[in-house]
Image (tube, rainbow, N blue to C red; front, top):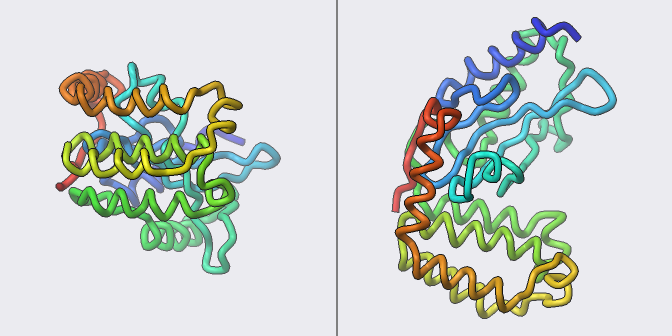
Length: 225
């Protein structure tokens, strides 16, 4: 596959989603308060095709590498028949424009404006009820999503984050699954309490990450409380 073809594809997606910035040739992000949101074009391991995904990453971990290690949400876009897109890099611009139009229409969050906190939390609630997370609602993997939900809320509202923390405490978590993942349930709950008590440190780390040269170049929106 010629690099010029992949470059052309990248340029077409970025032109269509001009509210995003190119983080790399296949990753287009913007800052949203305490997160990065955007689109990734993930190449098929078997052929010269790719699939577009909607992504959310945190901005509160110790450095940019840690933040981008694993997404909070990785959600594939689907065609009108409900199948994941599998797009040839050599697809004509005319057909690709139709694909991009549908992707824009089905994007879980808008890229062109500030976004209410409740819209983000609602998206995360929906994501938590979809496979594979829905198969184990009390698992550690589910807990990780709820932790991210709490921290997104903590960025703008201590009151809302406290409500989420109370909900987390009431959940009948699968302690055995936590242990299998090398995490102690009680220690995890205590770590969340410490985050609430040390909100200023939490916010400071986000601002440090935003000043990283790789992040600083990105466009941005805010979370509306």
